[in-house]
Length: 348
Image (cartoon, rainbow, N blue to C red):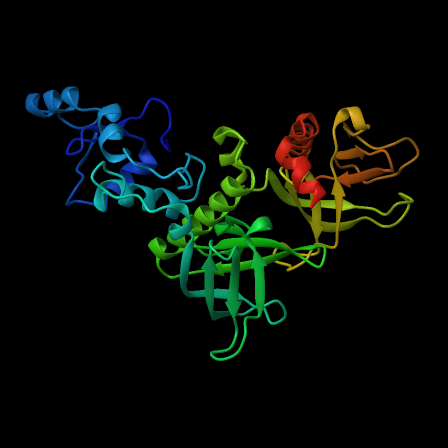
């Protein structure tokens, strides 16, 4: 699920072919996995025969027999902690073999423990108690040992995504939710890779339980991508005001395809966005263009214009590659049809 095509490495103890990135993780599991290069190492005849009798499909049938629908299977582009814990869960802990009893999503979506949370004002990370309950449909966190929760977060609009570069921690997780009509960001981590990935999958289990019970007739393939999601694109751009004559200011932008929302922040780790641009469909009059509207003066840098029925938004990109990526990402959202789940979400 997470390897590149045409892998050049193999675990000859498990009988599987793996990519370079995964080979590094497998080397750290000597009790269950032994690694060889397909090109550089010598292969004994009996090892070759073992590989022929096994292979990736055989291993998948054994070690992924009971992967819960909410459990996140990492892709090649995902962060190291997700890949490592997936490999350990499969081969070291054998969590998904046929003999294992699967937890129901409601039970799997319940968890209590401590996470290091970044302060909204002082920006230091402090240990906070978190409580997740799929049955109650909420996640809470506490700043004091005694007393009520600092926040009660509805699972209905809860999201989680790994943000290791942004948070500058290998186990950094961004949790977002709606409060008073705004999207709130929490940034957390845990010293243990297993613990933070277990929290992530517990949130996914709680979200799956909510979606499955709220939208019983929506097909599973449409439901699964909506459990949690990453932003389609993030990065710095410069923006001007509605008159398009105001000075350009550098802002951090995040494009959320599910919410069809381009948010901008003063800094990447801000708790709340300064503003947002809703992205509709082409039929509603939304469009993204390279360059700027006639009469708008900008620096000699690549720019984009997001056309909406209300106004045109002008953004300056850092370079031409960023300009192309933003245009492609925004066009992807504009071309995306509105689904049943999106209509239901808008009603709420």
